[in-house]
Structures are given as structure tokens and as C-alpha cells.
Image (cartoon, rainbow, N blue to C red; front, side):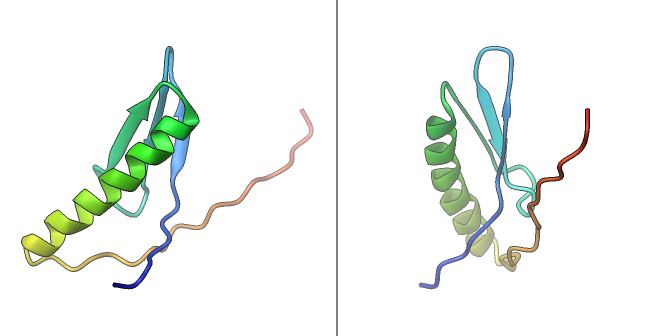
Length: 73
């Protein structure tokens, strides 16, 4: 099995964190800490891709680009 590297986005919510995978719509996780969300997203990605394979759907290749911009505020 080959390794895929998907971009993830983790945001602070009111009382926890939420994360999602832009290349896999509907693939999300929440947790009390960033580390909890990262661990949850690893599991969610594996589950999501497994479901896609079971349904005969193609696994989308990682395509999102992550970057930071510095701006004067």
C-alpha cells in the first residue's frame, strides 16, 4: 500500500478544535486538542478511503496546496 499525504485544516472552535480534509469532502474530526484532531483525522481518512474503495469510487489524489501569507496588520 502506498502512502498518500493529504492537507488538513484545523480550526479553533468555541470549546474544542475541528479539522477537515479539503480533498476529501465530508472527512472531518473534532477533539479537545490539536493533537486529538490530528489523530482523529488519520483514522477518518483511512475510514473514508476504505469506504470509497468499497463503493468502487476512485480515491482522489492529494491536490490541495497549503501556504501562509504574511500581511501587515
